[in-house]
Image (cartoon, rainbow, N blue to C red):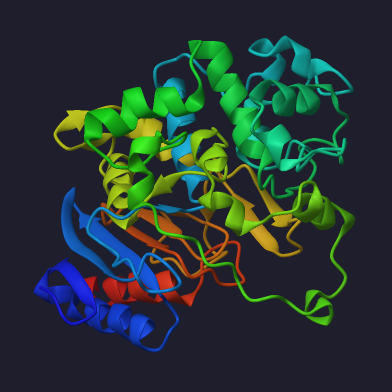
Length: 377
């Protein structure tokens, strides 16, 4: 189907989603976007439309990619789940078993699960770091290995906004001898034919939509941000325009710089929704997938200042409305979203370029996902 603003395909059962998608574009909530959903491994919705740039000179095409910020974390978590399912990684093991230098400054007992669940106390860097430092894997991981946690590991959650990708990624690198982006490409995205990249070659640059930064927030609207949140936001300063650079796209920052679209996000997470099988290939066991549902920690997040419930790399209900207890989710800065429903064997994904003031998704993607759930019920 297509309209003046929306292209793609949609199962007739879910036509309400087209209306929501088109309304977001026509009222300006979105400039360019994509939404996709799968059920039992089959794509039932695959929509895209709008523009890939703020000047509205480049249409958003079927193969347009965009930086999805923290929705990248779902790919990092999936890579770790894959290694755990193969017996190469134990979530309850100390990180130092794989990365001996990490034991410094009171971290000998920190577990891999605590990295996955944002409870290791390493929500950011103590030393001042620049954006260029984050492009230097050895420097970024070395500083985290050497530093003292901001709080007692395992005692509370605190969103590891950028640091989580380096922490989990270095464990993956120590185990496999390959970078996380390489393992993800060779073991997951490649076999599934999925167009999602952590460390993207320049040949894809022409397909990437420009992120449009969110509106500025008045200091009064922020209340009193915690020192931990200030550290996350300013060391280094988060600048969405950086995502337009070749340096950003080429680097591997496995918590924040994945390039993909709704179709590729939904396709990859078919693995988790369908018990480890996607595109006719079994990559994980069903038990290995369901480990993502295991609650690790809950409480008020020390960085975000909101109640959270974290599993192994994913958020669990009831942080956002979800249709059932076997659902996991994650969202990215600006509004991207991934939801996996293991009972309905369904995935839902949203990726866009007009950023909202949000860290865990917003009403655009969630509204379309909820329309899907309503139609299914």
